Figure (cartoon, rainbow, N blue to C red):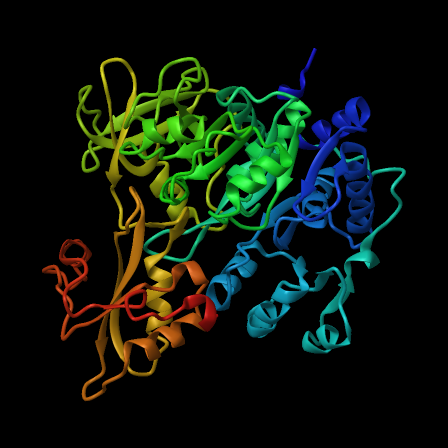
Length: 538
């Protein structure tokens, strides 16, 4: 008989509401708790509204909002009608937002009122968009700012709550499109079928041994996969509860964990380090947190972090495209520096020579390549991007772009990235999009964006190398203020370096490896050192 771990998202929601409907499902910080039955009822209301708006099976529905009750229930509603949820980064603006909207070909978007001006900025380029639903409501000013579109308040789309459309999905049907940045082009839409997101959640439940008694502290935005599929959907599989926050605050982390009785959290490596950098207090370990999933769990502080905060660190490795196939075994001592062992019942893993695609010997470093053992458990390609899909899946293996080696005992050790990918505070940053924004400046003739090491292990800050037009001189802060208008905040460079020319290959391409190797030079401008607050500019 199928268990909750075997259930697809809409079936999971129905079953949880029927079996443990009165249990608390999630609670926004500063808000009221929502039970499983209440979430299901609201999802039914939204689903019936989507049907009235002619959302068909397989249609895309964009959600652009912070962690909150209504966006979560909208996501659940899309599954009830067999539609495809497209959660867009709330930092997107300009070309990033335009690309995601056009690539998804969505005719409807649910968006927070505060983010509507971003939509207005790119409105003329959005040829598919027809309907804008605003959380919580669309006032006259919002209506006027989006002419020729049907603009609705969220309450306007709610239908009856005592029934649902009755549509069904299979593991092969698309559940979500998630945009992940590359290096040679705009962000790619990862097509995740229902079978994949089910496995994503199941791996989280099993890897962290989640139970109905757990309270998951989820501050990771739900446009990222981990918070949504391990936190929210993982709780649905176990009957646990989720405490929703809108952002990470290092000062508020332990007080929130204590206030809400949180037993488990998921953190990216730099956030673990930020927490560790707080002055040590004698009561740090006096908290209910029993385990933290982290990628990576920084090796140099791992053991002392566990001692100080009285919690267990579980290192993992994963990608949106492949879920989280590698986990530190829960019932074994922490293996410092390793991201764990492969879940062999679900995946094959090979370490390949990046140039030849030939497998390298045990203990040798190469590119990680994976393939699933069960159907519909990895991404089905990049949306409307056959070239990128074929390139990633060459020779019948998904090439991750990450370098690693496997030790004799089967533990996997991440080494570096193959490609020019920039990873900043858990965001994959596209050098292409940064450079495209820079070239919009009338006085910038050329530019190249690279990642340089930040103060956190395995994390980057963005360096933009700039060539100005002949005879022109501009200040770094002016360049920064220009970029803020065209880029999501997490793509805005920390460093700006003006150069006479870029180093180039014999074929004329910028030698980004050389720029990364040179890194931050004595003449490089640093907005942090200059005391320029990005938050104030934004």
